[in-house]
Length: 479
Image (cartoon, rainbow, N blue to C red; front, side):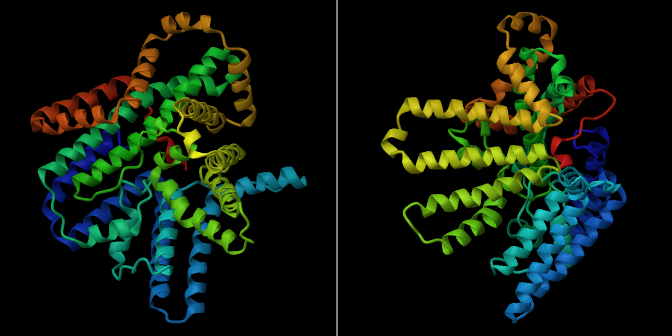
C-alpha cells in the first residue's frame, strides 16, 4: 500500500467514489473511513493490525479514566501507566534486539536476538497516543466519549504509517463537525498530491537508485562519487519525506480534513535552530511540547538560578531530547550519533545566540557564514544517518575530504547525464523562492478540471516509466 503505487491509487479512487455519498453523514462516514484505514494498515503490516487496535482500545480507556477520576493519585497513576504501556510496546517491537546487541557487546553476553517484525508506523501512532494522554492529563483536552472517533483519529490512513504526527486537539474537532468540501478543497488537495508524486515518485525515486549504489559500498567509489551521493541523499530524504507528507495532506484535504504542513523549506534555514523549526515540523513540535519543555521546566525548577541557568537548562533539555530524537528514528547507534550530533549543534547555536550581542549577529557576513555552516553540518549528518553503519559513514566522509577530485565533474556528467539533470533540477526546485512556489500552485489550482486530470495521468505514466518492478517504499516507513 504505497501511495505512488497503482494499487493504492485505484483503491483510493474507488474509496473516494463511495465517500462522496457518506461524507456528510457523520456516523456512516466514520465507520466507512475506519474500515478502509484498518484495511490499509492490514495491507502494510498484516496481522499487526491487532497491535494497532489494542493500542487504540487501551489508550481510549486510560484517557477516560484520567479525565473522569477526581482522585489526584489515581489520575497520576493512570497517566503514568498509559505512558509506560505505550513506551514498552514501542520498545519491545523496535528496540529489544538493539538492547540485546548492545548488552552482548558491553557485557560480553551471548543473548539471542528475538525474531520480531516491526509494525509499520508504530512510532507515529504511539507518539499520537502519548500526546493524547498527556493533553488529557494536563487538562488541555477532553477525551472523546466515542471510541469510533478515537479510532478514526489514530488509524486515519493518510498519516497512520509515516505521519505527520497529528494532535487530537487538531483532528477530533474535525471528526465531530460536519464537513464542507468545496472546489477549493478539491483543487488544493489534488495540487498537494501532484506535488508529492513529483517529489517522491519521480525525483526522489530516481536519485535514490544512485545513492543506494554508493552507500552499499562507499569504499568502492571515488571521493567525488561519495560527495555526489551525500548531496543526492540530502535531496532524496527531503523530497521523499516531504513528498509523502504532501500526499497525506492532499488526500486528507480531498476528504475535507485539514492537516498542517510538515515541512517549510528546511534547507533555506539560517541556522540549526531554524532548521528544526522547518524540518519534520510535527515531530519537532511534539518533542518540544512533550519532552524538551517539561525537561527544561524540571531543570529550572530545581536549579539555583544563577546567571547562566537558562542556558544550562537548554543544554540539559536539548541533550536528552535530541538523544531520544535520534533513537526514535531507529534501533541503531548511528541514529543515536546523528541525534546527539544535532543536539551538540543546537547547543553551540544557542550558546552563540546567548553570548554574542544581537547587533553583531545581524552582520550580513556572519549571517551568510551561518547559513553555509548550517548546510554543511546537515550534509555531514545525513551521511551518518544514511550509511549502513558508522564505519561506512567515516569511510565515505574520509573519501570526500581526502579523495575529492574536481576533474571527475565532466566524466561523471557524461556517464550519468540523466541523474545529473535530475539532481540539478531537484536542487533548483528545493531552493525556488516561496513566492514563486505559491504562484505555480495558484496557477495549477486555477486550471480546468480536465487539464488537471491530464497532468495527473501524465505524472502516473512518468512514474511507471522510471520505476523498476519493485516500488521504492517511503524512507520514513521504517521509523
